[in-house]
Every structure is written in C-alpha cells, then in structure tokens.
Image (cartoon, rainbow, N blue to C red; front, side, top):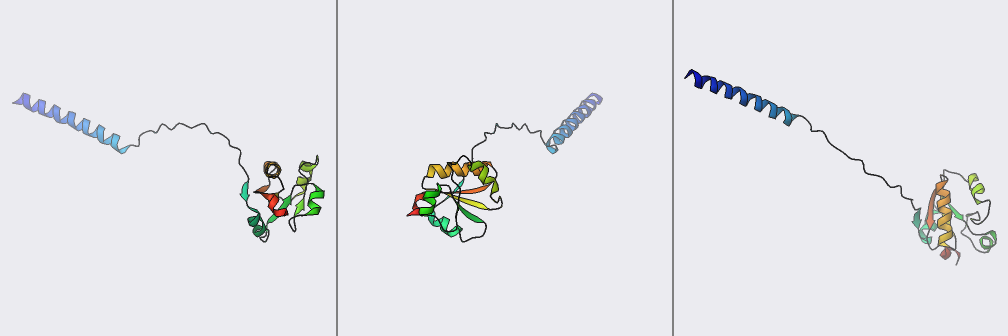
Length: 140
C-alpha cells in the first residue's frame, strides 16, 4: 500500500508539472515569424481628369491649368487663365522651378502623350499634378 501511495504521489507531481507547463505555454504569446516581402517601387501615374472636370477644378482655389504646348498653339486657343510652358523647350525643366509648389497643376496639351510626360516631370520634381485626358477637347 505504501508503494501505491508513492506511485500515486509521483503521478500527481508529474501531472501537476505537465499541467503547469502546458498552461504557461497557453498564456504566452507565440513568437511570430514575419517575413518581409520584397517591395517593388512602382511609377505612380498622375491623377487623371476629363476636360469637363478640368473646367470645374479651375473654379476652385489651388488649381492652375498648365498648357504644355508651344506658344503659337497656345495663342491660337487655350484654357482661360492657364499658364503656358512649352514641354518641348530645352528650358522646360528650368522654367518649372519658378512655379508655386503649393498649387496643383492640371497639365493639358493636344497630345495625351506629351501632357502625360510633362506631368511626370513635374511630379518627379515635387509638384502636385493632374493629367487632363483627351486634352485636345479643351481647344475645340
């Protein structure tokens, strides 16, 4: 009988140790193995608006239409109250440095490719830009 008591005591102690070690693991937060994914830097496209949206935004403070066609095309027909900086000019990058960086520029041209490229140059220089899609409609 004494032997059964020792076995029972030993079994009780073993169960107690097992119980406390299991409950301790339940209360601790498991270590997370988080792997960082490689990030791919994507080239952000400028925001895009239609010519109708351009005209509405021109009524709001903080927006300026920037016509990036040559001066002859600009003088023929343009968006009222717009600025003109010829994107094809060798001085374009120098001239944009005189623009106000607090403004948002609605970049318009009769060529979406040209105005898109101009918007990207402005954006890469720290300007806020919006690309005007189908900008040629503004000059009809």
